[in-house]
Image 1 (cartoon, rainbow, N blue to C red):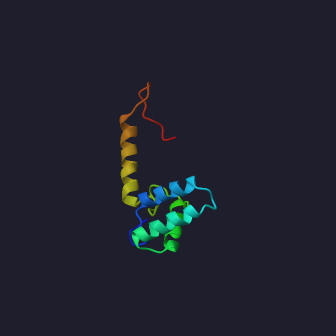
Image 2: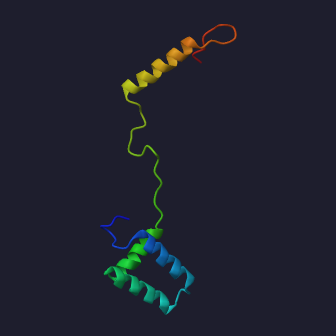
Image 3: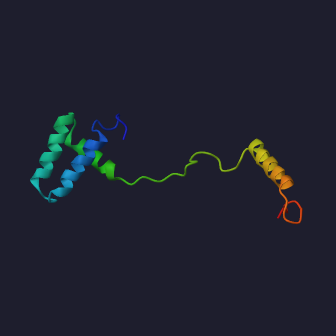
Length: 102
């Protein structure tokens, strides 16, 4: 999370989440823990709940080339074609023939 959206460091949120997970769901101590965290960072209780919700929210996974076109630019494609052509000319099989274009 960015510092602009939440004044609570992510490690503090994770520790708070772990403490809350150890308590029963209807325990009044949960509200006390949330209120203490809100007071410590000078934010509202609602902001703490919102930050806790965002920590556990699943995020979409992106490819390593996210935002990049999959099609190679013509200059890069030509470079790869030249490399392949050079490999084919320099490589021969047992009969002494060049690699097939197959």
